[in-house]
Length: 582
Image 1 (cartoon, rainbow, N blue to C red):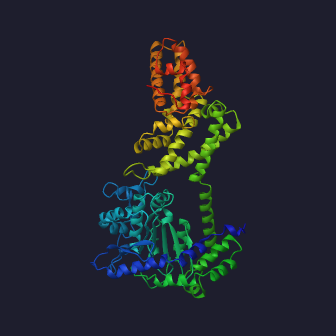
Image 2 (cartoon, helix red, strand yellow; image 1 turned 180 degrees about the vertical axis):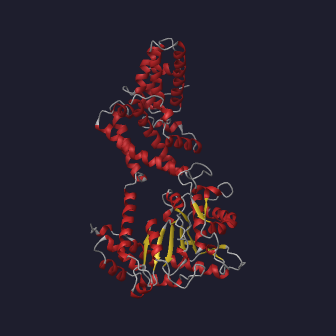
């Protein structure tokens, strides 16, 4: 059935038009051209060089090119199509270890591109260190042909090194570059949520180099591709499967070989000349009957639809069928994005706010949110499970993403995410503990989810102790510092049950009593630093119920700091921040 909703058409033409009318392509190509004119190098082998240019007043351009007259194109040599597995390199060349993980263990990169990149790796590291010292500089990284492949590798290295919450996001623009790696590499890059959007690959339908590696079916694209035709039409595609289809469909039928230099100057000028609203609006209007037709419009723009001469001289692409495939690929991509279980940070803030409201509501009812959720009797208690699930998926994904990126210094999470993850852990893990013990299970710590463990580990490694004076002032509303606090309470309740059980041996009772004394000391230490929320002293809380049972077991002869605070009701001053424990 045709999709007649115009608001859901592919935006490839509009995005391409915006790019063409900007000066990004023109300035990037000028930087490449200037660098090529100043390179003098041994022409017997292919080398990669880079240079700085300030073509645009508000940014810096870093251009990569290969030696102008390489006697042989490395891609045309024997083994030029070979992919090199990053797992095979991880012991001897660690530059791209961040793209290797258990989930993407088969990531591989074109060997010729790595050969060009490797000799200058120490220089690239120095350049990245210099760029990191100026995080506010807008950086365009560009390159042509295999120089574009090296530019992409440099960009990946840079993305791994900078904090994108503090530095401006770099943009890598390549011209006529061959595919760089396999599908596992594309997966590894896409696991870092913003990285793919940093790459724009410009491809002319007259340039044979971008399609030179298609005989090796293992190659797979990443980033956004801007396909251009000789007439000046263009369109953008992001979906990797669609990009592969279009590369196949636009294989250049030209006298040029992959080792020839294709000059993108005229292509860029034609894009600029043709990228006007009147021409683009006419094209879209004439083809806006259905979503499939909108893709046919894009195929016309990039020169895939053959004219009569082409139909007689070369293979004819089944345009309608290709358009349907592109439509289906984009629909699948949109579906995956919109139905992704990982929520945005804004969604997380909204759901955390809902939990804050729930916590305050429970406190006003003298029960505390931990015990209210554990009882699970009211409608708000049931809705909390939904909020909790959204937060769980988001933070599980964030932790997995951070783990895939090897730690060089400090936490794998930036300060904002580490702060958000700590608040999440302290707010939500008590609810998981409540759910665990509500089911009649024991020993939550042995079943503790991995993302809580990693968030706590990274927090402890990266922060200084929190100020007890600040927590004292707001102890009635703080989150308990130790997100495992209620697990300790529940295990203390279990210990009391053992002590009450007639069948328990003397050794068992002695061991449990020792654990309970340790628990007392643990609670007192938290109270000293005002690290536990005063809600634990609400009349209906599990902690207060534990205390009543424990006090009855140990009797008046038991003397400790906690028993003194509880029996004398000094704990009531804790909520006001007026309790000082020696």
